[in-house]
Image 1 (tube, rainbow, N blue to C red):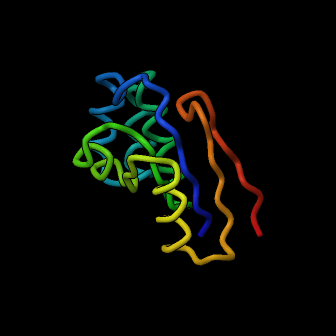
Image 2 (tube, one colour; image 1 turned 90 degrees about the vertical axis):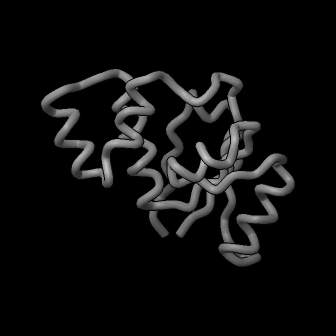
Image 3 (cartoon, rainbow, N blue to C red; image 1 turned 120 degrees about the vertical axis):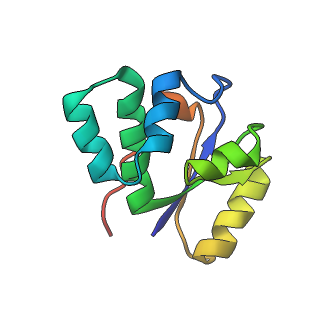
Length: 113
């Protein structure tokens, strides 16, 4: 599994649709089906996050309370250094760590190894 660290963009937790779809959809397929019938702009972000979490361990560097971070399946850290250390502890010293600034504006795609 790849490890990714995302930096907070300062945009907060997300819009109401993102929160609703993130909390009400157990898995990616369920959310995908929901969005086919009731597409909402924030829902697509929840879907992209669920897809990323299926492929990678995502460490979020943010001031958001851990309860929110963990509810989205993310691993919380307060600093970049702590996030990188946590990722290396979890994935091993030879793991690949991607640090993404302004994470809300990006969708990183890592090639399969």
